[in-house]
Image 1 (cartoon, rainbow, N blue to C red):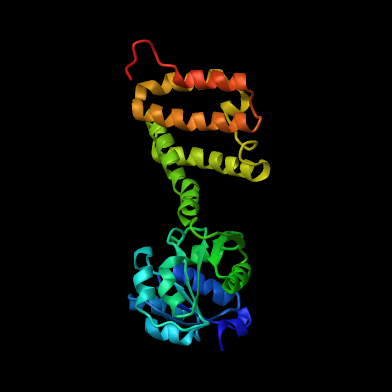
Image 2 (spheres, rainbow, N blue to C red):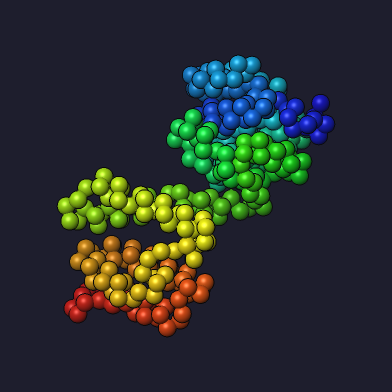
Length: 300
């Protein structure tokens, strides 16, 4: 029986790759009532740990997973998705799905050439710990790029997990993954710069985090309720040029890298505020001038 003749809840689901993402997704789907029937991994202990939580699930070879399952998630590292898919014998009517954010679905072309449906199913969540990831999945977004029928099935899976669905057209995975990285990874760089400033007067990184994390959470709450521009706190959103001038004066002695980092980010907030009517053009020009200002005798 091929995929087209089955209800999504009837599909037998398999996993090739049983790392943190594979475990969290398999456990989540099983808990949601879907049939995770067999798994394989180059790391036997990972496969056994995954299957132990899903009693009917069998640990087997990758080819047996493909032979026995209607829908196969390839949850290997990105670099081996394509060779993994290419090394297997697929059949018409089944589905091959990878869970990478940045790898194109064309990495599964070997399966498509055999008549299988192919797609991408990328949960926008961190997977440092599979149990924690399982708990944080509901309410997250899963990005789906797939053939028409598989698109419908994967949307059903996402909803079963309590997730929102983001549909992605072909060729956009690089942009999509970069967008996710800006918010999920670059925030670490922001905290690192803030902690460097905090430590400049002898305080510790730990004390910086205790002080700054609640501040960041407050900003995220504001963005959630008011939007990106209207939820922006701070001097730029208030039209407070004098405070920015004081920031520039205080940071110049800490070196050109810190100053350049601040100027780029603050300049971006000026554009954001101006573009959304939070400040007017005259105030934006004052901010831009303040960010360009240097002390007399300063070197470029």
